[in-house]
Picture 1: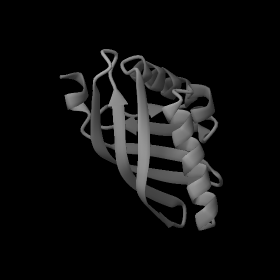
Picture 2: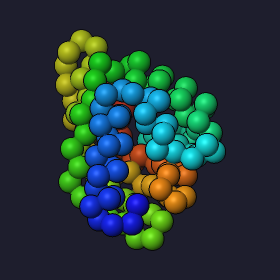
Picture 3: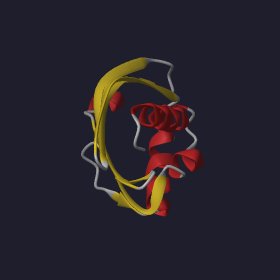
Length: 123
């Protein structure tokens, strides 16, 4: 991911996979031994652990929708911020600001950190 257009396109594709709750397509963006952390949860390492963490989270929501507001890229690091709206299983919705930090290994993500306070999602 070097050009600005390429970065935007790849992130759009990544968030489309997340919003579709498509874990397998999401995993295609990661190296095999990637690290993934959502909020204050401990990091998951490797695709199998990440699959379990992501599928576990997806089971707690009916759907989600991400809107990106800003992307900053420098070398092998990308930071983005935006707003995510979660739809709960009871059809109620709640939105949160988020920031994601990505470390790249070539075109793939080696470390994926999501900074969000999703606690109110479960209240």
